[in-house]
Image 1 (cartoon, one colour):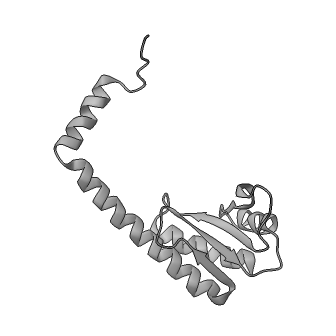
Image 2 (tube, one colour):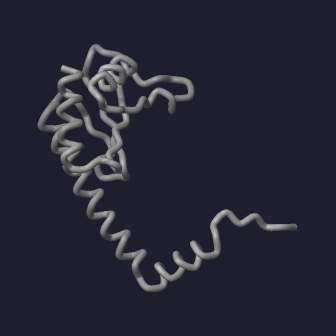
Length: 130
């Protein structure tokens, strides 16, 4: 049986050296701090702009959060309004097998955004959804 290798041996040796010299752990620590700061900014801006009109879920987790929005708009309408203002938000209805939630819940990612883009994006969402 043959083994198909997708990563070149040069890349593998480079990564092994990176890990052996401790750079990987340093990189992970740095990225955790960066993403923590971005998450805190996103939560702070959402709370400042929307107040009691949203509930934030997962503010201490990974690279996205879920928000429940108290609104008369549907999930699809909120996504379209956000898109029209240049902000991409994601549906959660695709994750339900049988019953859908009676609440409108959307997924927001932030990993590829700067702090300034997060602030601007939340402002645009506020304008789109008010």
